[in-house]
Image 1 (cartoon, rainbow, N blue to C red):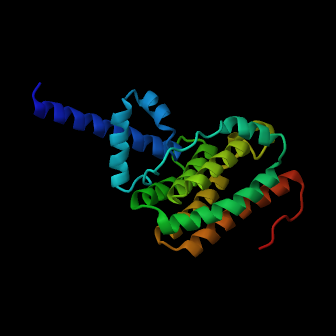
Image 2 (cartoon, rainbow, N blue to C red; image 1 turned 45 degrees about the horizontal axis):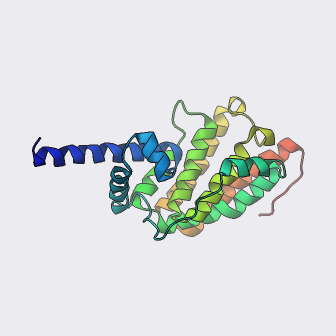
Image 3 (tube, rainbow, N blue to C red; image 1 turned 90 degrees about the horizontal axis):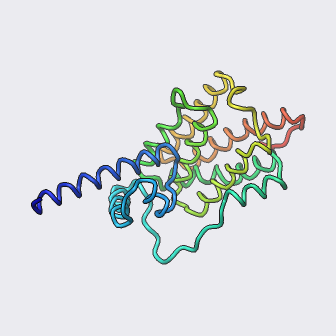
Length: 229
């Protein structure tokens, strides 16, 4: 094999890894740790890092942080413990504290590629469960905020929400077509505000969207008004 063939082969491999990384981001909203990614994609760590650098250069990923990052605790264990000491209304209170700010930051910081993903996920894909589609949209906004700590907290919060023991919301089987359409419309308003680089409108649209969810949960639990406009 000539040097040119080697370079060409390396470029093709990098392109394949980049394509796989984009698919993971689109489907899951964020990338796992490098070690997990390398094992999942069956590539060497140095190959993975080259592909990650390509995405960073295109503005599709936030820049790598300098210094060694301390290992994160197992969020699944943490969320399991939190489920035992909280309730759906507390989860919604936390979401309403965090997510409008994430939407505001996304309007200010998200790259064009991140905004494209937010717009894409505003509409629920055919064949995808309502809960998964909703989670992809909110994760895309968290990623677009470019605040890694807030994104980690957002993931933990959604893990708590999705734990079956919490009985947070109706199951996918009970989510009506009408509600999915209404939710997609609410998501679209948020996404368009972010795309317009309007942080104030994005923040309010997210708050309004979450307030609808909060009222539905309060009604299901037989609780009176829990929010002030």
